[in-house]
Image (cartoon, rainbow, N blue to C red; front, top):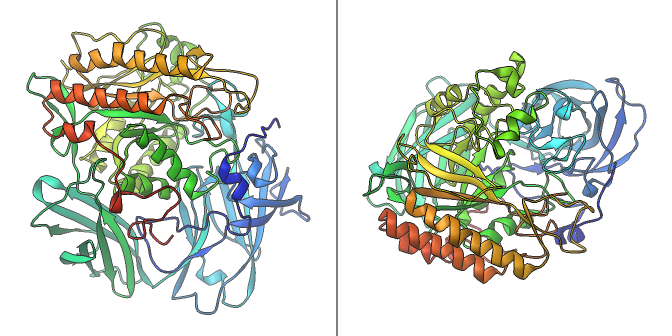
Amino acid sequence: MTTTSLKTPWAHTLDPDAVLQEYPRPQLARESYLNLNGRWDYAITDSAEHPRGWDGAILVPFSPEAALSGVERQLLPGQHLWYQRTVHLPSDFIDERVLLHFGAVDQDCRVYIDGELVGSHSGGYLPFSFDVTAALSPDVDHVLRVDVVDVSDSSYRSRGKQSLRRGGIWYTAQSGIWQTVWLESVPQLYVERLDIRALLGERAVEVVVVATGTGTDNAVATVVLRADGETVTSATGPVGQPIRLVLDEVREWSPEDPYLYDLEVRLRADRVSSYVGMRSVGVENDAAGIPRLLLNGRPYFHAGVLDQGYWPDGLYTAPSDDALIHDIRSMKDLGFTMLRKHIKIEPLRWYHHCDRLGMLVWQDMVSGGRAYNPAVITAPVLLPVRLSDRRHRAFGRQDAAGREEFTGELIETVQLLTSVPSVVVWVPFNEGWGQFDSLDAVRRIRALDPDRIIDHASGWHDQGGGDLQSLHIYFRRVRPSRAWGRDGRAVVVSEYGGYSLRLPGHEFSSREFGYKRFSSMAAFTDAFAALHREQILPAITAGLSGAVYTQLSDVEDELNGLLTADRTIVKADADVVRAVNRELAEQFARVAGANAATNQAHATIPSARGGQLEGERDESHDRRA
């Protein structure tokens, strides 16, 4: 496979014996933790039979296609990617049960311990675990094997922007283990999940403790809420039902003040910690009757960046936790308040960093479907094409099994991230890629999560649902319409810009994809400023509530990032970008009557509990670092 030598700074300091050691689940943390990242044996075979030999070592959790894995081989449909390592549990590790966790494995896998199958999983983007208590004993060497297959974009399965024939807006396909593998020990009855709901208007928090194991009937949990280490309130209630905590005073969460309250949950012998940010989002009319995005009951402009989450050396997997922090802080330093996580689900630590640093997140679902029809997904860039997404075959969704799988993954994604304060918008479909029955998707999401905004069809093939009219504008000017807002939905330009600039020594290949090319950083900066001052600013007056610039960084052929792919250079003058974003917020405050928008317009990167200097740790909210 063709690879690039382009590396990020973190690749040069990566320790193969201590790779991505940070606690992987800050939203539900407990003391027990054994990280299994590092060197594993691997083999790529054409058979589901266990291999008799190994091809070499692979650095987990980097996919074999990624340079940081040490392998740089493409797994093809029909092949099997095998992993193996030895697991040795310390004598004091086992409580009563042992759980084996995988952050994500692309795409389907079977897991064996000492040759016995302990579990299997389908789907490449969501975390899963197996109870392996019966298979493991302390102070004994056990053999852990994982068998992975990945059809990538040769089927209807969810794959995002991966392509076996990468190029343009489609990226190198990756496979296998791409997030942290770890073990934890839990009591017989333990907390499996926390569903945390901030009710800002009621000055309350509701926590549903989802428990599993022996003795769930009549089990009672206690939830304690703390602020700066001091207990504020506590409550006790049955598992599986909302436990309500009421606060006398509330400190709101926002990008300008990303304050997080600590939570402790006790369930018999189990103890877990979490946190909550008190914020609300919605859409309501401003004084002029124009629908606007709200944060904490007040109009708030979403100044966003499209974030693909790709790395030149790690593909889907960031080379370090500090690399994740760097992307978020870099955009925040430029004055952006939102990241649209594009067609990918990140490790839970990324969302945790958005929570504590103060960055709004629009979360895309991962697209799938058969090969896309250019007339459906590309023609609308220039032509006013809008099709009913009940026409499944037109959108590559003729497979009932694929539609069912996507719906299941949508539900799991909402459940996974429902307690994340920074996630404020759900985006089930983008540009018609595998889109189907989007109004049904809105109803499903709303039933699971009534508190967030839904962008049901980002770009085109708008079915009139959700909370947003969501436009992608690349090859024409942003021209406000008198119809904006008449249907009660707020208007956003959820993709635009995409200006490209090649910087020698920082590119992936000789190809260059972008929507308008520039030859110098000065010209790139001038064009960025003009785009916003001449098109986005006037659109705010006409009803625009949010905008998502394409994009955070260069990715392979796409040279349209604000950062180079190796994350070493900001292509535009940072002071100019900050000034532009400040002008957008100030204009929004003037026309929308945002009584708190002055804070937004003049925000700086938060300190203390809100954030820290790059590379430092916020001990209070960097769970189990």
